[in-house]
Length: 124
Image 1: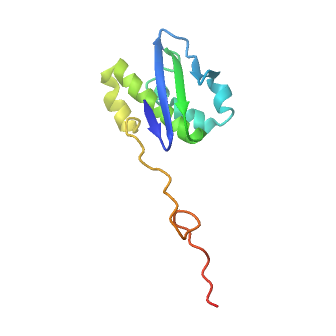
Image 2: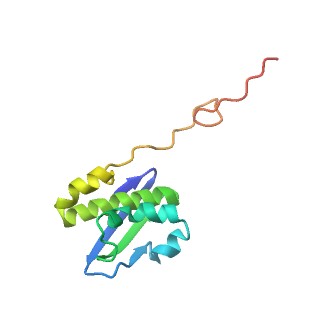
Image 3: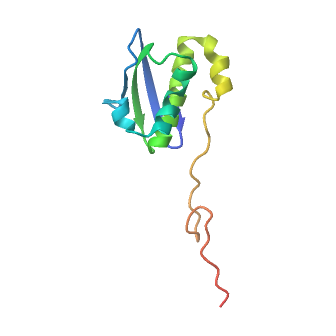
């Protein structure tokens, strides 16, 4: 299980696969479309360990937008790979894939337009 912003992802790895990735019942490329940066983020642990076609992967991801979901998939994928082979821990840790990114959207405060944006000051 991996998390990022408000997204939560669960990943299942199937060994001896062909590199097929299914996200919420859809093909990986169909789910994320032509957003190369989002695709690169999600698949970063596989590329780092050179395992792009070693496993078939099934992903269930909920909440947030595409960027947060890609980060959650990256986190979940790194954790799943760690269960497969604990020797990859140092490599994944140095790349920062095992650390959950704690940044969340800040709540809106009363009297403000957003979390920190105050209404424009008028002198008269």
